[in-house]
Amino acid sequence: MATKHAWRRMAVVGFSSLIVALAGCGGGGGGGGGGASSTTSLQVALEPASLEISGTPARPGSGNYFDVKLSNVPGAGYYYRIGHSGNAIETTSYVGDSSPTIAMLYIGFKSAATLKEGSYDDTITIEICADADCRQPARGSPLTARVRYTMKSIHQPEPEVAALTPTLREALPHDVVDAEFSKALNAIVMVSTWPDNALYVYDAATRAERKIALSKAPRGVSVGPDGQRAAVGHDARVSVVDLGAGTVAKLLDLSADTSDLVLDGQGHVHVFAASSGSATVHSIDIASSSVTVNPGSYSRSRALLHPGGSSIYQMDLEISPSDIRNFDISSGSARLSWDSPYHGDYEMCGNFWFGADPGIVYTACGRSFRAPASRREDFSYAGTLALSTNSPNGGYRIESLSESAAKNELALIEYASFSCLVNDPATAPCYSHLNLYDGKTGKRKAIYSLQPLQFAGITYAQRGRFLFHSNGGELLLISQVIGNPDRATAFQISRMP
Image (cartoon, rainbow, N blue to C red):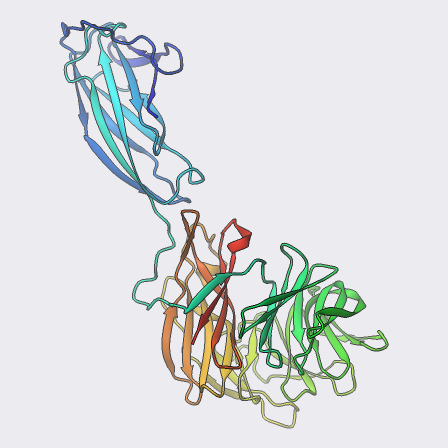
């Protein structure tokens, strides 16, 4: 619906500056009436006749204006009235106090919360007269200006990178705090804090999902080596979950907040504390609930059970350079045994994964190392996976990794480390890729970009979070729609053959 302002008077003072005398607010008011005749020499013109403007939710179009050119302005000044449609335009502002021969009409647009992506066409009408009743309209009045405003998203398909096209993508009805895969159940085991504190078991074959309620907000999850049980870490508590029965089998008290934890399959769960500084590792005997506390690392941790089962690999998340440590758990409690011989020689970037070969560990910077179960073996550099390096995104790091020996395939999610971690996702694109490698040679075979997704007329970046191979070799990718306020569609699961 069009908005028309009341008549306003522009008076001339000493013919060196102009002032605006408001004639009231609201629409209509003081119309020109019938029988108007131009007996004035006042003349007006508009430049330009139209504008095309674009903006983004973070940077809406601003500072846009039309020039209203005037000649033969009466000494008593003149009157003006502005009307506009309201598709994208919120306000107009007429500024004429700097010169008697030119005025500027500024345009203000609606907020990003009001405007969805797309193009909006508006019309502005400017009426200028020598008298209050507008019986003496200026020659050239009314002036008509046209504005096209295009609301764009900064999250556009990534140029020069093939788009990832999943065979199926569907929204998860909950968030995902942490996830691991159970080969015994051929299922993803996820923990969530929304809409409830819960553990979910997603069957890779049937796509059915089972929910198991948790008593507190989860910090992380560890699936045991048999794939039938999981441990969930909380603040001052651990839940031991029977995945097959769908029940919490036992609650264990803990005198620390969980950073990460490992269910070792030998009757113990080992919790690395979330505190910074001199952290600790708490080893809990599940049967007796007894706890042994030993020195841990230096900060929040990432921890994984070595495939050999007798040790835990741990890496700091808040220390640079990060390093891998081995904790021996053969006695039932986790005791620091040794760490890598590298201290900054090879970037590790604070996260790691075991591949299909239990003797190799991959780090978030793409560096791989031999992964001995005991110190007698050689923990040595074993190569680097090719990751994207295109500037200005500051290089890429691995978010999640999975390897299938049956498919001879290593797959990983990489993300633009600077854009995704430092910048506000509303102001900078966050690119995320799925990379595929030959499992024997480590050569990258393909790279696909996770496309931005649109919900309720707004486009958001899609960032990969977790990646798994099903028992049948299908890739299962959990992604997060960054900034999406609709929590019911904020996490998606995609499937690729």
